[in-house]
Image (spheres, rainbow, N blue to C red):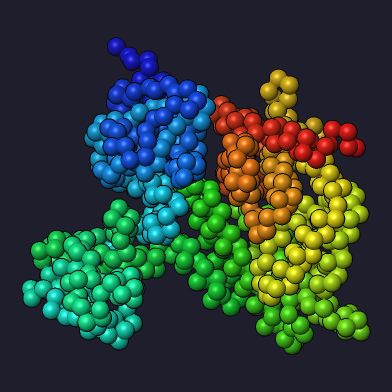
Length: 638
């Protein structure tokens, strides 16, 4: 007899990882044991420090907050919605939960029994890799830098990288060791002589009994806890984690993540009871994997030609795709890709400087604008940039500007060859309008602020999101000081910005249908950038400006900062932050799927679940626009 409930559960699960990696027969076996849980808004599923449940969870409908409390203040770390898996800790460790899970709204979750799931998937390497990866990216408290710094897994499923993962790990076969009778001073001297970051402590039978790293010396010797002459046994980490030779890159990496370590001892039989024959380090894994942020950044810094620079940035795109496929948090993705984009720009400038006939006549600063300036540029889009140079006498201005225009032309051409299109509106540093002295830039911003008009507001939406990338940072600080001083002299500018921020209403019509484009080749397409992302970007910008908050450019981070500053609107701002991240991830997925910017979406290609997710993200847009109307008295402002 068929179990219709289990079939419905199975049909849902098969659309989301890791369940989409299973056969339908296996999926039904799991679905039969699933418990369906209904939660009202605010209901708690589990609390921080609770003992692990016998289940992990996937959201069927609604959304689940994961947060920690500090000084009675809730700090939301993530909001999971339809298809998201959470509560993975019992699958990896037996530790209590580190976060509290509550319903953000009326929700339904499926509880997956751990024993049933493990029994059904025990022999699937792909499933195990996925779960370890998901755990590594979500399970640790993201506010604990020491733990998050250890997360480095970068699997690339369905690519040649999969082959690399299953290659035999290339470990150090002649590890540097010291005896248990050694002093820390002797061990440290060996580490220094061999220029290594760790040393293995062995007994008389050459079996590993402990390991000492640079961090151990820093934390236990430099702080005065132990004298430099102390025995290595007082400093070493013991017991060591071991494996036998022949382990794959994937196996080694998984063990490092699971045990939060950076070194794995290789012994004859894979246990601590046999002779040490090698050491696998975090660095060994990174070098083999190649498509890792650390490795990509090194390639960028070493690139001597545009061709090499483009190849390194394309690896960043492959990394982006793998992160999206693994469901890595979008905040982590944007941080990584933003670092790669900035590194590419820096290297493009350095290469351009080498081509210039002379060194720069005066200090200058290169500014990234728009999405790169907000650290939100994930896909290849057009470039927006500007250059500010130190003031010079009037009779030297034309010559100085000409030098920097020449430099900027080389940089923008390089960026174009890498994959960043020229800005169609010519908002680039090779345009004399956007390559000026500090005083000229100050005058420009003063005019925009004190004499606002349609053009000023349009340009402000680009230029107020600038971010220093290269050169003299003091020039940027001086410019920023002038901007905030000028903003204190007027309220009219905020009205113009506010009006611009509410010009695009909620993306849903009266009957909750999506508002799509009506004309031309874009007809019937939904513009997720202009109708959903830009209203949030514009709202965050004006609200953070009026608070005089500097150096917070990212839209989601702006909303999170606003949540701190205005506790009475905390829930709305956090919802805006979450919605922006979810929409950004959705746009990125569409861009990767169709090899474009992702901003124009054919709604007919979306599933019902995807449309529901989008609608949920639209909820805070209308609410934040109502706040702007009231705060800046916009109802009668034309």
